[in-house]
Length: 116
Image (tube, rainbow, N blue to C red; front, side, top):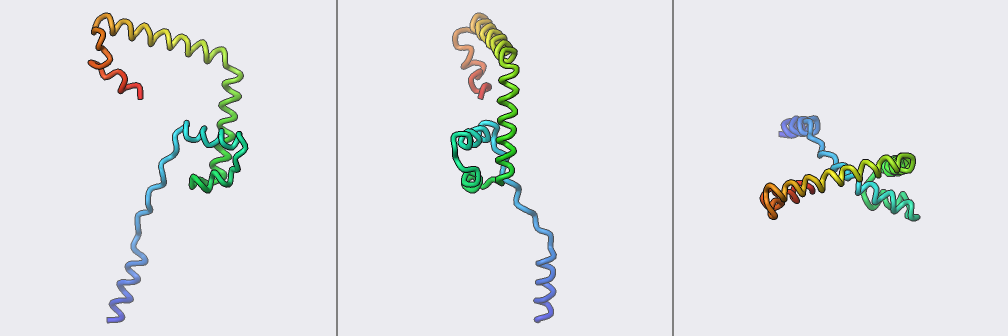
């Protein structure tokens, strides 16, 4: 009886177990919000502990945020020009849809649901 228990115990501890999946990666907006907290003076270690994130990961997001900010600052006029062009294209598309599909084109095509 004891030998059977020992054998079962050995099998149990040596049996491979599935590790729980890692938590999902936060969205870019969530990462940026945490970095902005740090830039406003919050303690990195406290945020990392509160969010259950490795402090090094948080520092990496901080660095990425600053790099993105520098890229935007260097290319601001080009980015804003591209945004204006896309905004113009979207307005044109919406007007064409309104003309050919009707005033209720957004409901018919579920347009607002696709932009989420």
